[in-house]
Image (cartoon, rainbow over all chains, first blue to last red; front, top):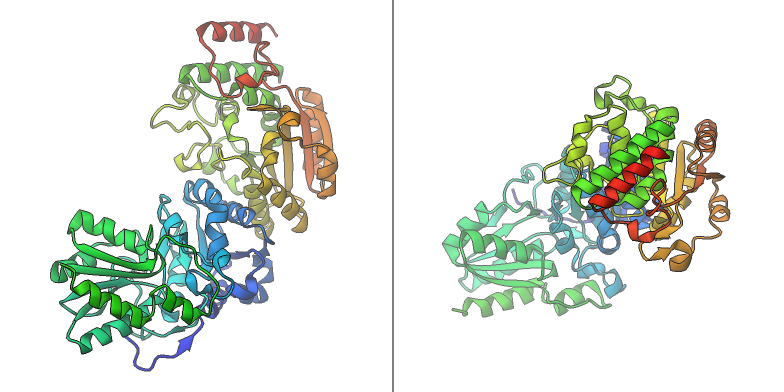
Length: 317
Length: 269
């Protein structure tokens, strides 16, 4: 399932290319963007199918409600902009119009998380998963590499109802062998097998966690690494079984520790198997300008920082 | 038409009295417009999605969702669903939600509204889809004047023009009142007609309680090849003397004696 010779690729390019591929097969697919099509890569769809692409200008509220109107008419609508502007800016439109009416709108947000980089706090969405997760009927998916982005976008096009898909700005190292890995919305994905600690993650921190787990192994700590691209609806079984084995859980995410994957894990374990959980993410704080890797380091999201935190956590009784 | 609108007004006041809550003022201001729309202008099959012509229906969006009773009353009196349903307004488990809901599958209800300022963008999205699909009918959006204070309404107006739509009709129920007072006191919209013209709309300004003026403007809108906005000047609470032009009746149910008086007035006028 895991790839032998990983390459580093752009998940945004993969998103744009997948839209083009889907657009060829399905004339019902339409795409909206709010003046960021060159960044989100929806411009690739525009180039291929100009009639089915609508640039909404810098007007995210209007974009989401217009997306709703198109979906009411039976279109499969992909609406994209940066995660910061795709969520908080138009939360009421997403809740009251898209989700309340269970409309077939796929919000694919790029530039999720701290790794937006130099643009700083105003562009770093650290709460978007929390907002989206709280709305009834909204599904939330954060793919871990490009091959998964490809499959998740296909899944979105073929699955009715509202969905929030979060993609990072950064290029990502391949994790999965696209020939062998099949995205399954119904379960968490076991990446590595271990008995000492469970590490749950998704999105661009998946690579960091895998590297951290390798380092842990060198000092004799075997981590059970779980990838949870589907944050909602959260499927508890794989997590519960892992927690029953390790009795210690760490969650790593490029998001606030409030309301995201960490919260989903805590809520799930509180119900099914109460376990001590340590959450690694941004801690109730805004981001700031900086180079991507520096920011990951500063907010504790690199493999090295994750490794150090887990070593500390291993001693907590 | 007058008789029909009178029946709907009576149903509205009874629904709101029965539910002990609701929004009579803004429902009464748009009843006459809705009556003409549904009886003279719109093609909306009464057997709704069972109709073979369903795809070709005109789309109607009540952006000012709090006037739900007016739409429910019109639809029930035209047979889209049983008048018995009206007793369920605002009742647990009913299809007649406080604000219209497309989630509950009620014949005649196109979209969910309630959070103001969103109906027009939905309408633009539908109009874009209909153009793609070659559907020749039009989208009609009824808005309140107060909700035009929502910024996204102007985003939608701008977009309708930018996308060169010619299958969208905006009707503004301009009753001049909102919860905290007159629209001019709270946050004036003027000069509204000039603004709409500047946004690329062909405009009509009419008396929103004069059936012939309403019909003429809507007929023009239907035949037009442009974006059309109709400013219908109306009276909030129209038809019941103590409710007319009184912002206090925006969201309040009549007591028993008030219901009695209202029904007496409606029967006479």
